[in-house]
Amino acid sequence: MGLFDALPPEVSLYEVSLRDGLQNERATVLLRDKLRLADALATAGLKRIELTSFVSPKWIPQLADADEVARHAPRFPGVVWSALCPNERGLERAKAAGMTEIAVFMSASETHNQRNVNKTIAETLATFDNVIAPAVAAGIRVRGYVSTAWGCPYEGDVPPAKVLWVAQELAKRGCYQVSLGDTIGCGTPRQTRDLLRLFFRDFAPSYLGLHMHDTRGTALANVLVGLEMGIRDFDASVGGMGGCPYAPGAAGNLATEDLVYMLDGMGVSTGVNLEKLVEAGKVAESLVGRPLPGKVHQSGIRSLRA
Ligand code: HMG
Ligand code: MG
Image (cartoon, rainbow, N blue to C red; front, side):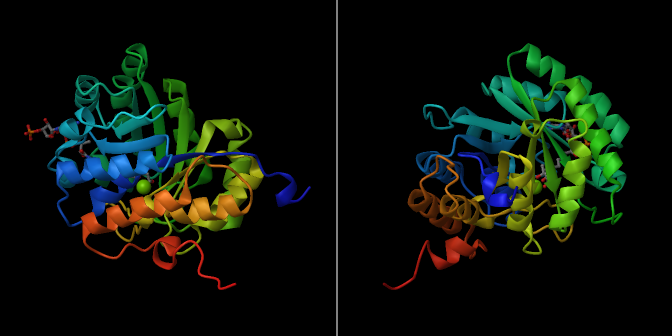
């Protein structure tokens, strides 16, 4: 059976521009402008949107207004807003803001984990004992991220067995889904196939999401491999904004417009209106004050002449 025999009728997108995108921008974006982008993304039909991070404002000053952003998130039917939470303090802030979903995050490589959250992997998991179960008990769904799943900016190759182990630890603690992060966008399709094959010994494809950064232009190719192998959840960021300030060389995420363009053209529904999404990308660009790298964002949906 080939790729085009295995295509699903629909997939679920998880938008990260307001979080992964803005955490990495120099520009300070005002609260009202963040809310304007949130509105534009939901208007385009995105249903799962990461809004901000309840992390330390000293570590990520761009998202220091997380509590306000979350409190003022626009209400759209069927839209679930989420936010990163590194610890108990983050969970308390998320609860106070009325969040119904949060995301915990950690890395499969020690050095990136240490640089990103100032803790070892073991300490991070211990911290999550006080985040995931209490959140779930309070009716808050928890997504988990495994960063550096394809490679680490400090350590290079990361053993796939370690990536799997970290995901298992997150699953055990109650995450409803684990998103595998190619934090520095170094993954290639064969590596993606091999990693997913390993994962599928323990996990159903429906449990996993792919969070690809497009640093080296391989994000869509990796998504296509995931799609063929049964993955139905993909993270993306409008305009291709994004990066991790604690991962040198991490460029933007896969652009949501590029992903929707490809999926639309293949007859795979995302529930997103591409024209409106392109408008949201323009809003994002105007807020950050620099040209965004997304391909469809730059070229438009179609420029063919009849
Ligand atoms: P720390 O300095 O080790 O923490 O930071 P601490 O517990 O010792 O506390 C130090 C100070 O931070 C204290 O304040 C705490 O109150 C405060 P002080 O007494 O100095 O005034 N603090 C907090 N404030 C607000 N909210 C909190 C909070 N926690 C402590 N939740 C910490 C540890 C985890 C907090 C810090 O390292 C941090 O915030 N790191 C965040 C890093 C980050 O957000 N990175 C980017 C996101 S990850 C990513 O992009 C990858 C991803 O996209 C997937 C992929 O691409 O692979 C998800
Ligand atoms: Mg990321």
